[in-house]
Length: 454
Ligand code: FCB
Image (cartoon, rainbow, N blue to C red; front, top):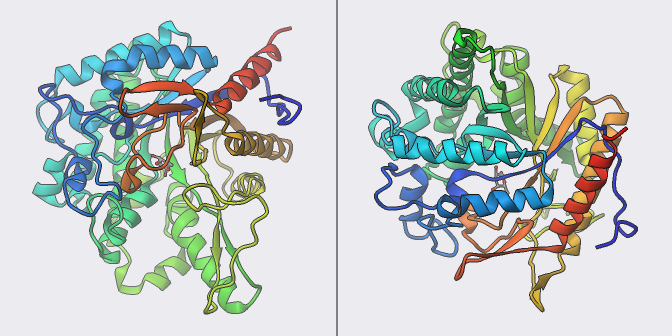
């Protein structure tokens, strides 16, 4: 894949280039390793929830193939790797006893990354809540879960804080709350908007409590070595299909429930008034002092951005124009939205340094002669990196980009049918093959590293 067809963007010399994964999507659940079940194990076992009927028992078997997967990251030349801890792997019930076998795996992973010169960026909660907490207290419907989460966060910070570049508390709380508790599409599969909004509040509370707990651990550390602390939000900017009052209002509410619902409490200490009004009786119960806990200073803000949402209130709906097509999930490809959104966040919130913690595309990859020519994915990555370059030129303080994902993996309710990886995974043999996008990203990283010399 030539750089003349997809020219390399120019990013600041200290800009970090990485890839991202998550535990439930790649690790596999080895029997006898002491891991407790997560809500995703339970969800997969419920007929009809996963489109291809698959589960996460093996996934990419990363648990046993970690060293060779880190070799692949080294081959790519990555500066950084974003992974997640599986909470039920290290604390099977989500409270009380720890599982040393689970900690040992992450200990090896972090050391292997450091030996390879790759900075480890960890996420504490990428959706795989211990099933025991779901059964005992209703998962994130309970404030208790927020407190258990802070205990888990402190333990991770104590054990690994001196070797991690960053720790994000939550991955995409909007997905946990809305897809998991309102739309029934994700684990635990509930369908109540009121429950979902209360869950969103408890997630934010858990984030704030976890940051406080991890900062206390960092302050007590004699060596003074501690990771950058932050959160990862998914933003899908809303666009009104027509400039009618109805469409403009619907797009404003969509923005209020997606972007501002999480940004406002984190940066302004309140939920957006228009979204609260829209929710009526479904608005969450907030206790005195909660916003002070939620509004902790952040060392960085992680943004995951894949696409935009097109809001039309007409029947039939006005379809979106498709300037760059759609990916295999049906998500529109619109790289300039990333530029616009980064500039908007900078203007509206004055955030700390931003990391693009996820961006990538599912493609209907075809293997031909042992190779995968995933040209649309190369165009996608190139387009979005160029969008980041533009955002930086317009004043956004963006410090890194993590492609989602290293490997094809378990794409939640889509099972293994949707492929996002730079490496193709053959699930029969677990063989990994670098796609054309992996070769392009590798060449781009090499060129980017050259800019650091001299
Ligand atoms: C994000 C998730 C990630 C992956 C991508 C495609 O919402 O954080 O786990 O599934 O979408």
